[in-house]
Length: 266
Image 1 (spheres, rainbow, N blue to C red):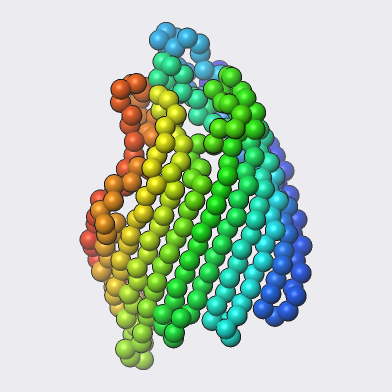
Image 2 (tube, rainbow, N blue to C red; image 1 turned 120 degrees about the vertical axis):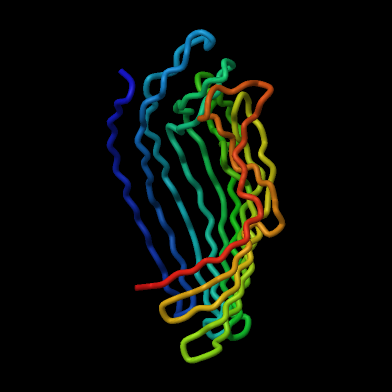
């Protein structure tokens, strides 16, 4: 029977913090995440050599994190950073057999280690710089032939590097009116994905510009999304239909878009 699945799980979280002084906090966290399983759609036999499993099971992850939060320059600068390790079991991963029809299977265990950094700096009154960065090393820890997984392979859709940079300037021009301008760059590193076979999606940057007026209850902005008209390969689109070995379907981002954003808060 397809279409039925039932799972349950417990997701505890434990955090301990040491507040060294009014500007510095150290913390440690242990937490668990849980994701239920589900049914697979049937695949045709032939052309596929074997039927897909009717169900895939739940997966869970234990996360171990150490971090610090720091403020300086009279609270104009705030910095936070952390390192973490994740132990992932029963990984739900897409499988792409030679026939081109995909399904989901549990791919054994995986390990993830990484670090995150965030900075928020009021450079001068009204001018704010924000910088986020992340590093992730996510890889399969077991070889699972049934899921076409080899120990040491990178997990799918897990870029090593990500970053987000923004600069915002806001200046009052009246008792209840501000002029706001901002520029933002979002970076996503290269990552592995799968259609008929494993492939690498290249890194990309997306730049956004925004400028406008802000009142007490309203705002009006002129925006330019994807300023450089970057064509980013976001992910393989295996769900559309069967894959063909000479055709690699990939979802892409929206091209350069110019528009107006109006809002009113009731």
